[in-house]
Length: 127
Figure 1 (cartoon, rainbow, N blue to C red):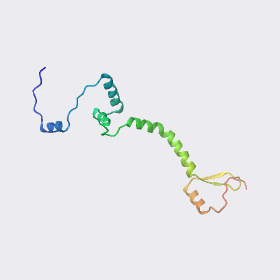
Figure 2 (figure 1 turned 135 degrees about the horizontal axis):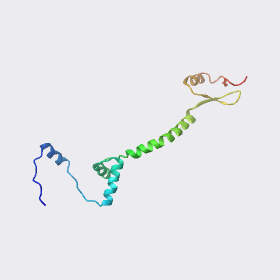
Figure 3 (figure 1 turned 180 degrees about the vertical axis):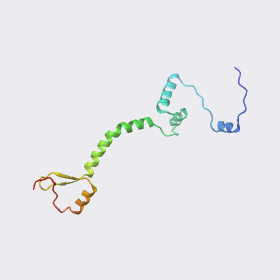
């Protein structure tokens, strides 16, 4: 087999090749297929896969993160709202019927803070 004659390269290309050497290796078809599947499914380059393997680069699990975020968001939002409601809901017991008055607006909360000594009742409770 004849080798091609060396063509002249621009100096910038020569410097780049010196600072970025090529790595070439042979792997089994099974390993290649597995690596290629990871590369395609996660949108990574071959260099990214090797950098992750050497722990030079942090794992870029964008697909897994996005899938977990999008699948878990509605469930987490419901749980988060319920927990926040249980922790931060301001409510006051009606002295007539014993039911709870939920104070939701800032204006209601300010009024409650100023007048906690007063007796609070629902506006719809009978006298």
